[in-house]
Length: 313
Length: 194
Image 1 (cartoon, helix red, strand yellow):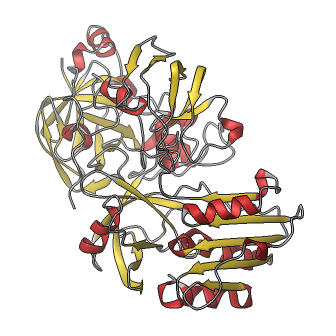
Image 2 (cartoon, one colour):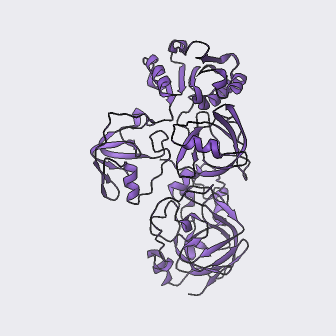
Image 3 (cartoon, chains in turn orange, yellow):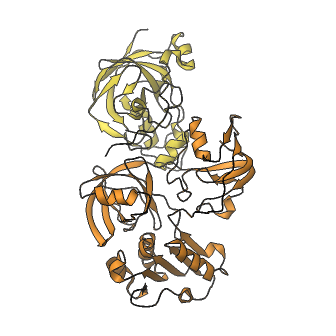
């Protein structure tokens, strides 16, 4: 559970990097130096209706004067990108949190394979920049329909040179996970893109150790077979007991009872509402907690319990 | 862009001299009296977690807070919890001590700018720890010391700095507003009688 400061930044520059992806540079109107970040980090963007959306930082981590984000217009999405495309202009004010990194670049490897699908390139671009700076061997596989639909391609070519391998399905073969190459203990893979790409890569790399394959998806996976059941929650410090009905989350119920809990994406991907628990059979439904932490930590926004759970609050 | 109002119950501001700390302190004489301080900075935040914004002057409303601040707007992190939070103050002298790592509780000095500590008023020459249960004026506004402020882990998380321990016992004062009005940077601060 980590609170993050929210800053009012200004859109300094804005351009379309593809017909449906807006690339923007954000600066602080008063502070010349923004909080530091590292490759793989994202920020929260607050939409005026109170909702929060996550966008990976895609600029240069060494340039503290600005943040860069790229937003793909998702007409069937949850409304954040359409709002940004229709309302943000150069000079607009945007409410942005300080960065958080759920996909940090592990410096232990000697060889890195980065695999991006479409807008999933955003966290991987600063990774390529960082790996180049570290002098590490890397290959970036970039999957998109065509060059004109591949966000930030010009920047990538500049940074990666021959380390960039593009897979444009409209004019050539689709990405073949065999191109990742064999496993060795000095190799790490980072994947960001749509769920089907993650699934394909995870399936191809199923023999690799879990801590060598790193992936991120900023969308909820809908499990149609999951039927939420009511359960009881106990707050360890106060002894309060509340019923969590099937149509409400743990987060909702705690807030309804005046427990001020932080949250952000509220769909199990950002990690803001992480909380400890002591007993109970927890049904983890998030995309962010590693297996090693699930014994005693859960995400209040999406995870539930069978019958009862006691929270370390 | 407006900040979305978060649906929360109205704040329950506790009157400063009815707080368990302020009520006891108000009945017991003591504390420094021969001092005269100054208001250095005024900061407010529009909502929980938002960066503090500096003002040259601000309007204080009795029983509610500083106009535009998250505790006035009922959108503060601790708004749902009954407490004395109309105005919070901290001593510049405490920030100076942090910046020279005194006492040496951390591996090094911590620079906490006036906009970072999330108290509303940064003051100098004011012995805040002596003012629980006391009335004092900032310009024409009269404040009542309700309880000592204490640092929270939330502040550490927001700042990413280990400020919890070094701020302990010098984290400032939470006040109620007895008489509202306008405060300005540079205003004199003086003790008043009970």
